[in-house]
Amino acid sequence: MCGIVGYIGKRNNAADIVVNGLKRLEYRGYDSAGVAAIQDGGMHVLKRAGKVNDTEELLRSTPLTSGLAIGHTRWATHGNPTDLNAHPHSDNLNEIALVHNGIVENYQVIKAKLLKEGYTLRSETDTEVLTVFIRSLYDKLGGDLVEATRLALTEVRGAFGIALISTLEPDKIIVARRGSPLLVGIGDGEFIVASDAAAVIQHTRQVIFLEDNEMAIVSHTGYKTKTIDNRTINSRIHQIEYDLESIEKGGYDHFMLKEIYEQPSTFRDAFRGRLLEDEGRVRLGGLSRVAEKLRNAPRIIFTACGTSFHAALVGEYMIEQLARIPVEVEYASEFRYRNPVLREDDVIFAISQSGETADTLAAIREAKLKGASALGIVNVVGSTIARETEAGVFIHAGPEIGVASTKAFTSQLCVLSLLALYLGRMRDLSRKEGIEIVKAIQKIPDQIESILAQAETIREIAQLYKDSPNFIYLGRGYNYPVALEGALKLKEISYIHAEGYPAAEMKHGPLALIDEHMPVVFIATQDELYEKVLSNIEVVRARRGRVIAIANEDDDRITELADHVITIPNTLPHLTPVLSVLPLQLLAYYIAVLRDCNVDMPRNLAKSVTVE
Ligand code: M6R
Image (tube, rainbow, N blue to C red; front, side, top):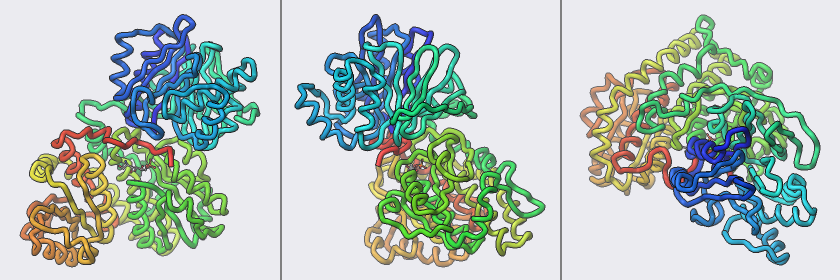
């Protein structure tokens, strides 16, 4: 949520470098953007409401020559997305500029104190309060920007990732974090600070990740790290694995479409090197140190948000079926506050694409506090959740830029199916059953290809229904979470109201919504609940609802019942969601495109939600 970039180094186009970095982070927030650079000893701030391109235009008309700059792309929390509320914010004398991700919870208290002391504030943001607060401490100390920043941060409650520069000490960028990611990229005679590695890899792959309550002072020649309570630390240098290509559109119109089409290979990457076909089992190296705990776990809890939560629901069904371990799935935002009952031998898995979702992170911290083992199923290596969990499995989907999660979902399902097999084989699942599952997993990438080949049919269906104000998605068993996911995809990128339900729940209320104008998407694959789903379809048809069915290739019966059928190949029931979700991703995508919506940057949303 929000993106930060900063540059200090040998080049004199720091502002351009920062703006280019912001473009790579725009998926994290796109309400406003801005850049601050020190040129000829003066602070220059260019910012405006709108996309990074608008700030780039400003920069084109007012070029800045500087070796030191910071910038920000904003997802508004405090204050409307206006020019004035855009970051960077500066102090009253325009000598300190600061960008901030997160929320300063006690900003009203600090603000009152500053106003009493005679400082003035122009915007409605907590960030400006923090900037002026640092200035006030600097004045009181009679200098020393690092100490003033450090002292201010010890008083701040809430979450922050910040970067600041100042004409008072124009030889450094100060960065700090609590609850909001930040890293320092180490280049050749230059350093790039950022909230996300995507802004850095064009310049360097060597980074240090700040941990919570740490700060870094980055100069032209090096960096120092310490804790906000003033202890010196040695931060380890990490190597970023992915390349530039993976964060570019590569000829596709949108990142979302590119990511949908990457799924044959991302799914394969999620199981690559992990299947032991002859033994009908899997090797999950990331879990080896907790294998005994998992063998004895009386219960597994999944906690997650959004799409990752839907993957967790599928995981629940998978593990209960294959391993017979009771599983609970909890919204992280609920779990963290409701004082859950946890036992020491409970195992909790956080599922997160970004590894930075604030609620999910807080949920595992709460679980750890209560003695449970916290493990992760995460995409981003080096993310906070990956670092704070005892063990886990990476999904290896590569960077996901589209705000609507697609490839991460199918890769999460892949890893959850591996986990279910891993746990099942530790218990009652036979080698023969294991081999059958492994074989089915290996077939999935080709099966995904065959579904993607139907894109044109799906686009035609999208054309017919793009103006419907409402949609209902229905599925049962493994396909119920898919119904939820299909509805989420549609609402987040096309702004059409959509609901997902277990199909049989229709008759308990939502059936009242059905008339000839209501498109109902049924996920009706041939599993043990198939006949029941056909009856549910009959009920909808009897009320003249328009039926779009996702069905198996050899299903003749469904063509008589549904207005439109999109087919998927047969697989094992617990792997079906990987296939049945694909037409729903494409349907949402095409409807959004046909409605002229900004697919990759839907209104009001941001890619990773690092605030509560
Ligand atoms: O990074 P995470 O998986 O923790 O993110 C969780 C949700 O914020 C995310 O899945 C969100 O719901 C997506 N925009 C859905 O497409």
